[in-house]
Length: 90
Image (cartoon, rainbow, N blue to C red; front, top):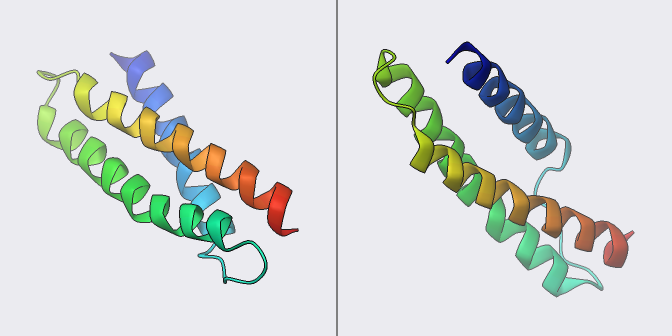
């Protein structure tokens, strides 16, 4: 359980750092990449909130695997959106 909490803390820290470092982008010549990027931010934040809440409320009784899987999915989509944005917009 301690290993899971450590992994989760790292994932959440990385996701928060990325979302802070990459504030919502402005549209210019790469509108689709910007729209994709801006679309995923609230979804990632929502997944992080749900996972954090599950962990805080679990008291060691729930592994929060559903919430973690959703966070992982949203983070993968975020990483793809960032990669596309970096490729097409910079």
